[in-house]
Amino acid sequence: QVQLVESGGGVVHPGGSLRLSCSASRFTFATYGMHWVRRAPGKGLEWVATIYYEATKKYFADSVKGRFTISRDNSKNTVYLQMNNLRAEDTAVYYCAREFLQVPGLFDYWGQGTQVTVSS
Amino acid sequence: EMVMTQSPVTLSVSPGERVTLSCRASQSVSSNLAWYQHKPGQAPRLLIHGASTRATGVPARFSGSGSGTEFTLTISSLQSEDLAVYYCQEYNNWPPSTFGQGTKLEIK
Image (tube, rainbow over all chains, first blue to last red; front, side, top):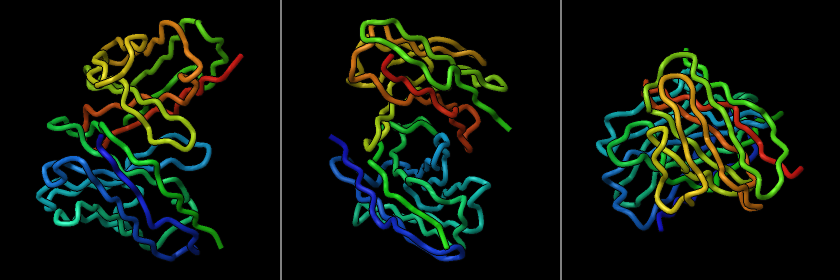
């Protein structure tokens, strides 16, 4: 069974930074696009960022463009989300998700999430 | 900007009931529509993709229908383990992809 485990969440002050990690197992990581999706308190799911296996194709939601970066290490089966200049509205549970093979934007497996709280 | 609107926001239901959840897109998404189930503290789970195709391992009591802008998720006979938040998501205009705000199923 596909496994995705997020880590790196925590409490940070506005303007601060965090790096989230997502460790993947039980599938051929290098061949899949990987995504980050978040759920803010009282709100629905919001797609955040995507990286494809070549690592040259990356996409970001407008709400995080210029502040967040995404990277992957296929030798470690891990995808990262570097979050800079964090704002209160970035407070959310962040989920890592795998892309359904050859269906861009569809997510077939998810992790359980890691909590990020931005507060002074 | 794509907007996905789900209704109702909350639905009180009893085990054994037939449940229908709705999702409306602000513009056509063809059949590029998915439904996810999300229980507290758990990973979201893909239920339906392509508007009507059940994902691997999803029980037959879950079915999806619709195309264009109007979509429905039906649970033919609600089980207690189905209590969760359900989200629709369009992936027709990727990137980005847009989710609805969710429908919460709770015990009546």
